[in-house]
Length: 208
Image (cartoon, rainbow, N blue to C red; front, side, top):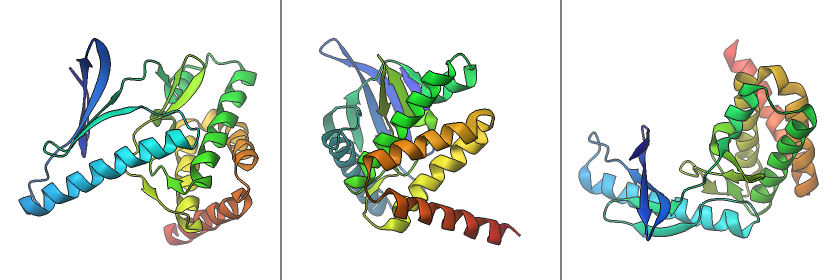
C-alpha cells in the first residue's frame, strides 16, 4: 500500500514475517543518463541506511533498517506507528508543559546527531513521529555526515524556518525549548547556534 509519493522516493507499507515495514524506493530520474542515475540512487540509498544506523548508535530513535536492495534502490525498514509531531502541535491539544518537554527533547536529539557529525538535512516536525512517548526521527534521505559548523548551522536553521512557518503560534517558546535541549546535549552547541543566526542574517540580506 502506498503511504507517500515524493519527488525523490515512494514509501510503501508492506509486511515481512507478519511485521509491518516501510519500503522506501528511490525513483529513477529520466532526465539523467541511466548509468549515472542508477549509481546516484544506489549511493544515496547506502548513505541513508548508514545515517539511520548511525543515528540509532548516537541514541536517536530511528527506524531499524532490515534490508538495502541496491538493484531497486530501496530500503526496507521499521514502520513507526504513531503521530507526527507536526500534527500533534497543529491540533493544539498538547498541554503547554508537554509541548515544551517534547520540543526540548527534539533539541536534545538534534544535539546528539550533531555531536556525532550527522546532518539530518530535513529537520521538520513532519519528520518526527511520537510513538509511545518517544520521538523518532525519520527520512534521512537528504542527510549527510559532516562536522562542519556551516553544515550543522544550516541543519538547525532549517528547523527554525520550519517551525516559524508551520507553528508560528508557539514558535518563540517552542524554538527556545529546542535550543535549550540542543545546548544540553551538545558541547559545541553555542558555536552552531551563532552560525545559525549568521545564516539567518545572510538570508535577510539577500532577500532585500
